Image (cartoon, rainbow, N blue to C red; front, side, top):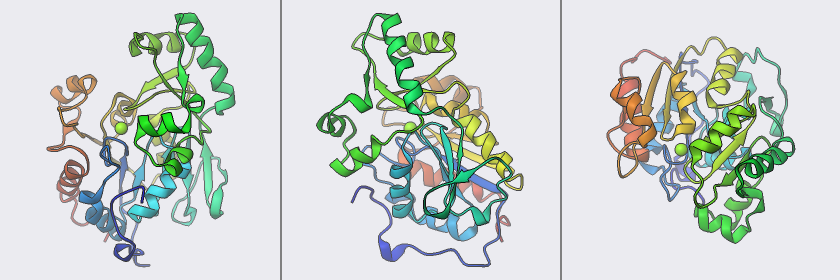
Length: 294
Ligand SMILES: [Mg+2]
């Protein structure tokens, strides 16, 4: 079992009478809804309630499509999801969405909206950045399965799913390399580097989690209100485009680079790390709209 949350007999299919809610919950996974053991059990009952109430929970993550599909099955989610830091949006059940943006057939009868550049185009650009900085980056695809498992805590199957990149090149910085310098050089070269929990990610300049959220909103203008949750700098583009943004702290508090926006009141800080804080903050926020989705 890769994820700890719902058991199979706890999963329920939403009733046919479920009405589309105005609200969308768009959430990062690693470090936000999932702890370092990939456990989300404290939020599992709320995830089930949100599905039943017609409030889509949209994972928005650096993970691959295959990883998110595994998580969605474990959590009982049916809505769309955003992969590889905004590289693409997947709509596994497109019948519930207007889909007013260009899309193409995806796996299992769903649709995919590509937003980023293919990894084959990005990889040589990562090597160029490293050469300019006089350093070496270790791309996720270069790591052995054992090394990837050690860095992520994933099982062999989970690590294999994590390696199936299409829209991003995750990499590990050299020993003395500051992320800020890499971000700045990437920006100067018309690229984008984002810092996640375990890896930095090279992605196309026209793609990030916030731009993916904007595309998701264009896909169905009925979904007007977005509650977003994240824990890292790579979530800021998402948090900044939401109607309400919640930061999930780690064991030592919120990420240092998110603290100024929390102090300024742009982001709410959840009361506890991971699924416990996620469930408490989301339940409290959505209780302010008791008639939504009915
Ligand atoms: Mg995260």
